[in-house]
Image (tube, rainbow, N blue to C red; front, side, top):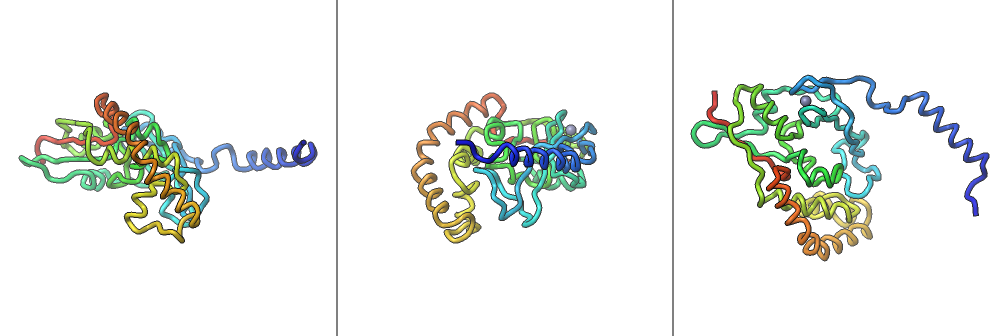
Length: 243
Ligand SMILES: [Zn+2]
C-alpha cells in the first residue's frame, strides 16, 4: 500500500528544494576559517546536537541547551576545532601539558587519528575529553608544540589505561540510547528520570552491564592493535626542556 499521494510527495520535495535554495547546502558554513596550526582551510566535520535534542544513537550532546555545535577539521594537520572558535595557541599549549621530569613537559591527549575515533566518529567516547579547545592528531600536536618553541622529543600510544576504557565505551555507544552511559551515571549527570526516560535508562543499564564483558573481548584486542600501529586512542608525548 502506498503511503501518501504523489501530489503530497511532490509538495514535500518542492518544499525541501526551495528551503535548500534559500539556505544553501551547508547553511552553517558561510565562511572558511584557516587552521590555527598550519593555515590550511578548515572544513565542517560533524555536528553535535544541542542538549535536550533528540540525538542519534551514541552521539554526544552539546553542552549548550539551544544550539548544536559544529566541529571543523583541518585536512592537512588533522586538528578539529569548534566552528568559529578563536584559538590562543599559548593557552592551548598550557592546557595540554604539565611539567615533567628534567624541566621538560608531558602531554596526554585523546588522538583524533585513532582507530577508536574512526570507529566512533560522533560516538567516540573521548571526543569531549581533550584539554583545551583542540582535538589533536599526532601531526597537529607536534605543530602546536613547535609553534610554542618546545618541539616534541618522544611520542607514544599507550596500550593500557584509559584508552582501553574509551574503546570499550565507544563500541558500547553504538548499542545504547544515551552516549557514554556508564560515565554519565557515575558522574551523577544521568539518572533514571533524566535523559530520555526510564525505559531507555534501564535498557542502557542492561546493555552496559551484560554487554560490556562481551564487547571487551573485541575492544581490548582492537585497541591493542591500534596502539601497536600508532593509531591508539591516546597520545602521550614529551618535550626535551622548557625554554
Ligand atoms: Zn591544520
